[in-house]
Length: 114
Image (tube, rainbow, N blue to C red; front, side, top):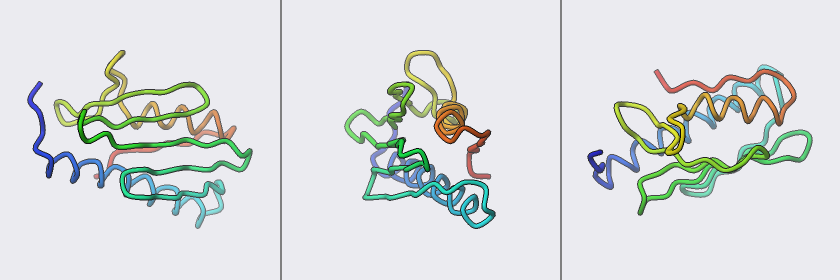
C-alpha cells in the first residue's frame, strides 16, 4: 500500500464528508428522512430522528476514515480508488448505507461522488 500525500488524503476525505452532507441535505429537502448533520473539520456527526448518531472521523496520522455507529466501529483506508474496511474489505459507502438504514429504519443509500 502506498501512502497518500497529506494533501491528497485531505482532499479525498473532504470530498467524502462533503458528499455525505450533500446527500443528507437532499434527503431533508425531498422529505425522505430528517437527519441532522453537524461537521467540525474532519468530524461529521449524523443525528437520526430516533436520537441515535453515526460519527465519521478522519484520522490523518493513520490516513484512515473511521465510522462509529450502533452496530460498531469501522476503519477504512483508501486503496485502488476506494475506501475499504481494514478488516473485511467492505466498501465505505456500502457500510455507511447499511448503518444509516438500520438507524433510520428505512433504506438509505450513500454513494461515492460521481
